[in-house]
Length: 150
Image 1 (cartoon, rainbow, N blue to C red):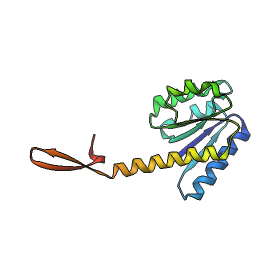
Image 2 (image 1 turned 180 degrees about the vertical axis):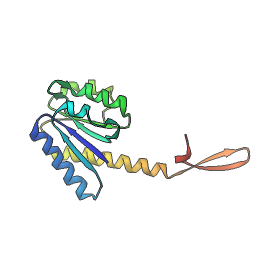
Image 3 (image 1 turned 90 degrees about the horizontal axis):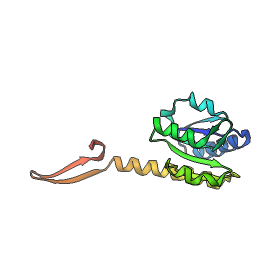
Image 4 (image 1 turned 45 degrees about the horizontal axis):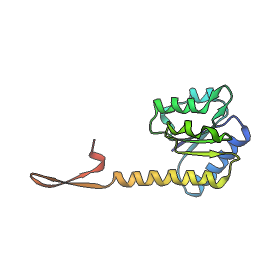
């Protein structure tokens, strides 16, 4: 699991990192967490490898909304959670299909809820992929694994 935190406020970025580290370590979940404090470093990052990004909206010289749009162009599977002090952008974040939107100040329980929801979603998706689907055919009943459906 590849997590990226992008926030130009150093304290907030590292608080998010600490919460992520504590959560994933306590759950014995393998992950990599990258903290960025400059938007241009995100643009040099391999966007297709990001699974979850905790993204500020107001970043020096960039809009988090525009960065999220750029990420989604390259990686539609990336989950984006905005963490910002600006509640007014929630409707702009809607068209990006943001996973969540948290208004600062950062509260640990809110971030943990996002991480739990994300992990639960991954577990449910994984469970779905291991299931069989039953189809009635002219030759009888056919069972197909969900992973074989294109």
